Length: 227
Image 1 (cartoon, rainbow, N blue to C red):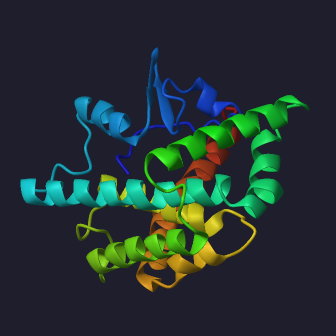
Image 2: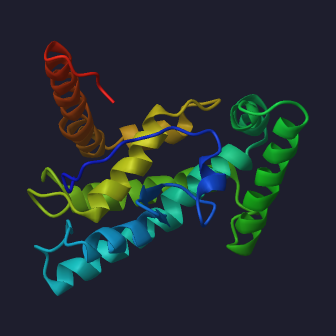
């Protein structure tokens, strides 16, 4: 969204490479910066910001909605993946442990599950039922849907950090395979949020991939090999 050059590299051990143990993280030269907030501040210090056009009231509103997303959607995703017994056994443990040999795959998966459950207990989510979690997700989506309205982005015509954060979570919910569609159906109930995800996917990912492919093809025709 800042139109900065970036190369995406997939690594099975990404969270262990991250300084905070969380993703996403970026490496710029010898610096490694993890999680959205610090990444935004790092990029801003280099002269790039998506929210420069907002006034102070809008920036405060943006931060409030970002807190809502982190407190509700992120936590709900962790709950569904690590605290719902069926999902844990059929999806999460096999997927999380797949890059590693036995018994390391099982050890790391149980270790991660223990960490998430400890977090859930600390924030008061351990005693929640699946129905309560889904209701929290629905309320969050309703708030986001009302704020978005008919605009292309949350603050009209240009995306901000809020748009990036919301897209990341909603797109993950819509595309991640779980044992049921209950979570994704909560998002699909809000057509403007689904259209929002599709808009960003098409503009910033599909179009970018086309441009990259065209550029690589052009270089190949001139005798260059794509890196």
